[in-house]
Image (cartoon, rainbow, N blue to C red; front, top):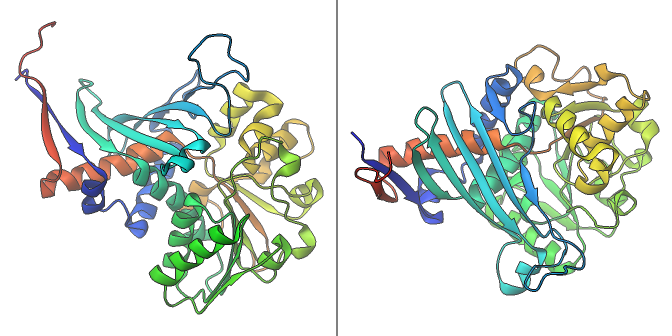
Amino acid sequence: MTAINFRYLSEQDMIAAGVTDIARCTDVMEEALILLRNGDYMMAGEHGNSHGAMITFPEVPVHAGMPCDGPDRRFMAMPAYLGGRFGTTGVKWYGSNTANRAKGLPRSIHLFTLNDTDTGAPLAIMSANLLSAYRTGAVPGVGVKHLAREDAKIAAVVGPGVIAKSVIDATLTLRPGIDTVRIKGRSAAGVESFAAYIRENFPQVANVVAVETIEEAIADADIVMATTSTDIEGSGAFPYFPASAIKPGALFLLPAAARFDDDFVINQARLVLDARGLYDAWAEEYDTQAYELLGIPGTHFHDLMREGKLPESKLEEIADVATGKIPARRNNEEIILYSVGGMPIEDVAWATDLYRSAEQQDLGQVLNLWQTPVLA
């Protein structure tokens, strides 16, 4: 009765368990966001809404061996509990450093630990780069499912990186009628790599087009994904989307840095958040610097609300759309900005679903923590 075993799942084990199934992941994320809206969750922080705890480094360390600050250089721990059919607790732990790419490594390297909520015993330790990437794409996917026009034909990608791959997977899976994707990136090599990814995985997309400007990318686009990393220069360097170039009826998927005119945000766009509590927590943690540091547009929407420039009622939540509490689309002309911050309850949900699949298929390795604890 005292023995504890847990399952170790490598990246290949995670693939076998279904981590790249974006349609399934989107359904799981929708379920998780509804549980969150109903309060059946806990995250870090005083009010249980924090994204997690982060370690950063000084620009000029005074101690030998301490790293110096650099682009996206940090460590992050993201713990959460999620109720409902999940009923599990877990933590995603990762280190991030943009310089990794010069070594042939991903910018961030993720590991996830899933625990029994009652005893705290580990259930699984799993490779989590794909876990994180696909849940990151599936949360925008919930927006595509409910908020994108059914007749969407053109998609635009601004920032064709790792995040964009899972977001485009969700978009093209949920709106298979899209036949054109326009790509705006920083390098020709990055754009071509992303275009090749689309051609290989979604041959139904007849037109994959590289463009030079954001205006060209979003002209007549029904769905726009802004997936560019936050710039250390601040919001002035974030990708800018002028209102004059936006098609009526467009849906913007915003899991990364993006900038819009305040007048457009306040008076023209419909604003939808993945979860209001996350933005409240960021405001407590970072105050007015949240948008500058994180780039997530919803942090700026929150700033405008706190400044009295934006009615609180304009900040809607995707779970209320998913459950029918508020309409999916009020008309085909409204422009919707869907801000996605990313939360550890999403990792817990997807990890739990995949762990149970791995258990059924006997994937990975079962490892022993102890037969009987030395200290009890």
